[in-house]
Amino acid sequence: MSLSIVAFRLPKGTDTNTLTKFVRGLYGQDSKSWNGKYEFHRKGIMEEIPFRKFIRGVIIIRDHDLEKIKSYLARYKAEYYIGTIIKAQESDTDVGVP
Image (cartoon, rainbow, N blue to C red; front, side):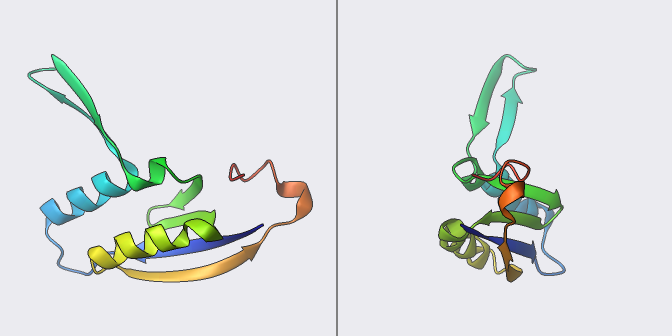
């Protein structure tokens, strides 16, 4: 199985509301309202995909999940760079990606 590393960022000057929507839609978010009386969870697309996050804007995913991420990034006009990773056999369990 081969993996892909994806590095992405939104264009400079992107407003805060758009940044918040982007992150919420990508990773999901737990929210509370009425001083914690109501709690709910907004699902993100990364909750359906096994991934490893290195730093802000850099993730490792399986190759067959790449199209979902590319279409999401294109929706927000994000710049992204994709590389292929060939995993060593002994590191299968270390990565956290099946």
